[in-house]
Image (tube, rainbow, N blue to C red; front, side, top):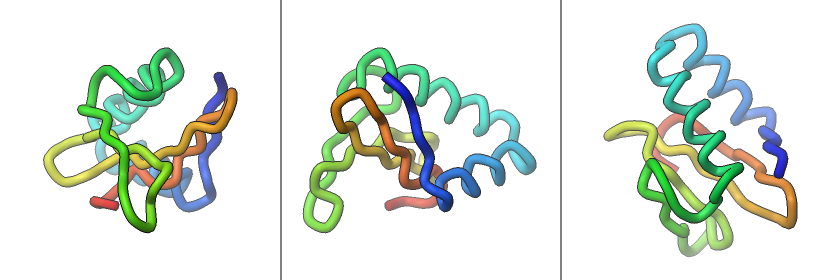
Length: 84
């Protein structure tokens, strides 16, 4: 399975790389976990509802979430900063 980032999600990813290496490492660990098991594991994965139906989120920390969608062999990350 491969991971792709939207432009906005990649900006978020680079933001954490510059601002908070610890959160950057957490996001990287979450991405690795998603590759192995997209719907279970660290970060309390949960399916999203309403406008984000079909997407999942995992907790980066108390405030921030990683939002992604799984389609066949590809995981698309939509955001990794803020709360949906």
